[in-house]
Length: 206
Image (cartoon, rainbow, N blue to C red; front, side, top):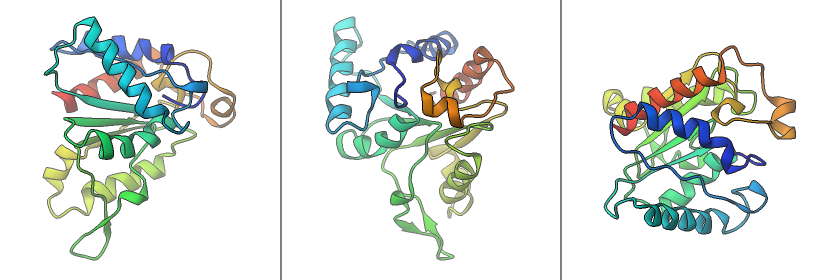
């Protein structure tokens, strides 16, 4: 979750995902101290509570696991997945991206190449004032365009952009102060933004 954004703000997006999915989709948004995934240890303990809660609610123990993160939560998530969940089926970053720390590979042309052990979908918003479109474009180039096999990379490390969507529209409700100051004005409704995110995410999950 984004800094200062409560887990409940992701319920509308979760419902859009579940309503559009052709399979049973369980969803949990971890709760962090101060609504910040950056608190040391918060992500690990929050994920453990979320998985325990899903199991108690009836999610099968052999369910396929995907992890998703928005904003600051998306920035923190890759390290958690790499270290704690390297066999996960996939990861979805929303208004976030794999940082340059993961450019540990090199293309045949000598360009830095992103390497990550888990398939990852990056979704950006065209009018995201915090996770800027140029940084999402960099993800496209370093994950797909310069890959030795762009077609395979597009399947395992896809990058999409939702036209007219801003940063806060991955969630719902009142934006925290920083988002309110820096985000751009959206050109699509929140419901439409959620439906478009759900479509991109489900194409990856399925």
